[in-house]
Image (tube, rainbow, N blue to C red):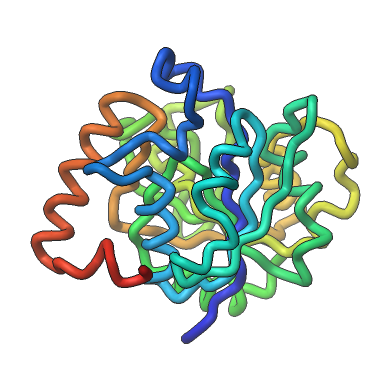
Length: 246
């Protein structure tokens, strides 16, 4: 499958856990192995046959725009949506980006490196005929706090605040959504993407796809170190992996 659905990257957060590093640069520009994280992230999306990206930016977003530009040096077409004076949260940022999206789109966070099979995720989403799909990972509170009850290919419960002992899976961080899932969401108001997922779950409109590869993130100093080591190993296996899109 070539030229998958476009990807929306949520890169507008304040990154307070990474202060003082993020007082002058956004999280997306933190260097991993001598290259800004977003270069690795966009390179991965190119590797996975995604060619169009919408970057939702906020805090120090102009620095991201200056570095990435139109995306051509990554082999991508990149456009931007700016939060404005008030941060819109993950859901509000996507709502503002919808005029640039015709139908379905991937969504991921600006601090996530998710090396999974994007084509297989899209195939599962299309086959489900539902408005949304959430990737899940059997986590057992290992990499982060589990927040999903999942059984026999279905999400039974999803809650990031009210967790139960039955939650052994976690939201992997990659979703597929139809723009119509946001039709009743408020414009220019802050809200969390989790609310959309929970609404879709209640409406039986949320499919699931289990990913077996662990996720990496740069939202913490430990995560930055882990990702750096992983990318070194990946580059040793495929020396052209980090340069294939340039």
